[in-house]
Length: 567
Image (spheres, rainbow, N blue to C red):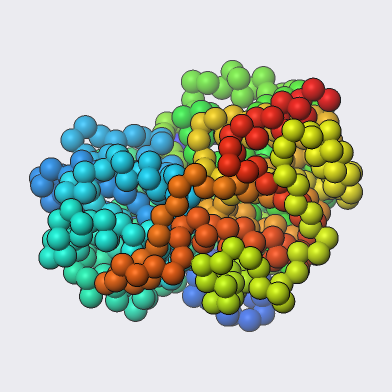
């Protein structure tokens, strides 16, 4: 076994055991493997064509073999960098591979650009020699506005260096067949196009091309990873013909779903530092899959550990660690259990056990969706933000003001200036409106850096310790492809603090692949997405406040956090 799992549920054990007995009696796991869509909804729409992830581990070797020629080519041709342009399910698994395993000597360094922040784009660009860079354009639908905008920009920058005849050879695409991106790849002579399985949803694609291609490019040893994923799949399959057997996915999914129904709907993940990036993948998998129809599980990741009495009684703690650092996890998990919190501990034998964990949590999330009576394979509320952004781009393209028929009534904007007492007073009034079971979502439409990460870590700690509320953070617009669905689709207990700032520099987005004419910049698009998401939250009945950080985002955020820490 590549993992060891222990569970301590305290007073919740009876209700979980009762749910597990029902799961066995109703043959729920066998029905999942039979792809019975009625487990989640009567209609097959959006489910029947999203279940091929169940067989993904057994198809991994074939997909890896089809990627290797590309990896050998670009290494032989002296490519030094690969840049992944993608959002959400198209980038998060690749980030896990990169941050967990690193880049093998001789392989191209991988940069992941899942941001349209102008400064982030410039940082990436400055690191590149375009003559030795491969761009991996990753979008299942082939229409993701951030990804296509980045593609158009970097395609023209590549033309500037290499000329139009050579530019296409520096791009590959991962997408569904017949998508608009597929047509672009063909028309502009991309080096290669890899077609995803149309019957696997984006966030369930970690073990398909969207996750595997970047892993092969950076030289990850895929054999033990594939073996781990296949072994987990086989263990999960055992329940099909053995009614007495309960798979790990069945147990985890039932605990997640049952705890959420009992009010423990803040699944708090604490991971060993080496595998911390896996938490971001888990965040999207659980949030986007379960947060809909007034229900949901909020994944809390990258939160600094504190005394267990600082946490509310809405937490389920899940510790995932590597063998060798169990002592710290043991100390923390015992403390959480003694404080009355339900606890799950998973110890991985080695890094390659993550292959099995990808499949395990896909299964567990699907089971949790069954208990919550939601379709874990769609994301209906994500479309509202996209629709509002598209309308803004149509009606006020290039302008910074909202169309007159859009209203942000009830959502105040506070400018972070020297009058910090007023800011704290108004922010305090906003947060005091929290309902039981509430949480705080920090939506940061600013450049992500190590300094901002640390400031948000401190801010989350202050909010938790002073209010007893879970606080999460997401950088916009990338979080819209991760937790955005949950924020609009769950029970409505979220309080959202949106942070915006001026961009010191901006970059124009070419309107098309074959023209440099531009109607909008990356900074303006980011602003439109912040506006669109604020409106979508308001229309969904959520409470939102905006903090405007001005031209010095880092300085203003530091002043805010330091002031709050003094209270």
